[in-house]
Length: 120
Image 1: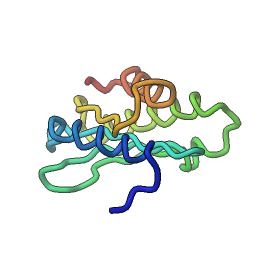
Image 2: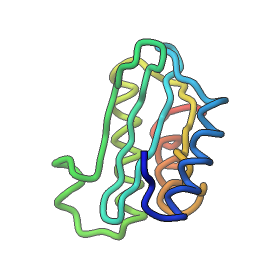
Image 3: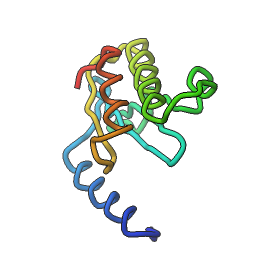
């Protein structure tokens, strides 16, 4: 896999380091975050079966139409992910920041998911 620039290369190496430790199960899935320049995505993944249990993103109907900052958008996605997870019967998760710093949009998504009822 050819990585385009040093920033992405750094993030991928940090991501690999994190993924050695963080694994999701059906009872305690991995809450992973992906952030692009404009959008943010969250998934609850069962690594043993290789399946995505719940997914939430800023392009979904409840979040997309709102005119808010990207940090507030991440809060909405975190709350949405927590609501979907609780509806699926999941209360505890393992947080995977996916190589990003725990700061800004990633932090606001995680805090909103905690406020929404997820434990990690």
